[in-house]
Structures are given as structure tokens and as C-alpha cells.
Length: 59
Image (tube, rainbow, N blue to C red; front, side, top):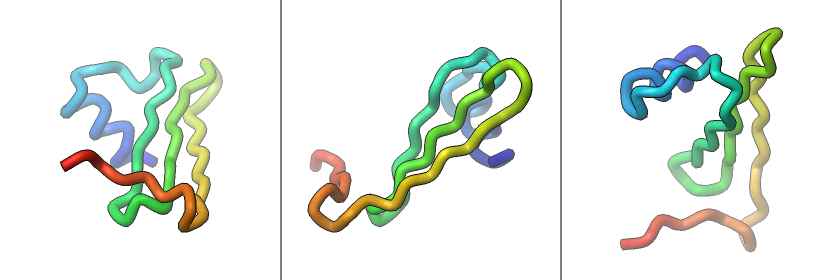
């Protein structure tokens, strides 16, 4: 979770504690991670996608 927050700070130049949702895709496209700070603490939600719904990046 800390490395995702660091990615938000360094790559996106945003504050991960501002309450925005940050959505990350896994390398294989079968995992989605959502990082969110609700004012009390950081939350990380993860969902593994079925093969049918795998996320692909455009060429």
C-alpha cells in the first residue's frame, strides 16, 4: 500500500491523502487495486478479474 501511495506522490504529483480514488491495474491485467484515503486512514481494495473481463492496454 505504501508503494502505491508513493507512486501517486511521485508519478502523478498528487496527494494520496486528499480523498481521491486511485485505480491501478496489475501487470497481467487480471487484478485491480483501488487506493483511497477516507479521512481516517488509507484503504486498499483489490479485486481479481475473471479472464473474460481482463483489462488490456491499447497498443
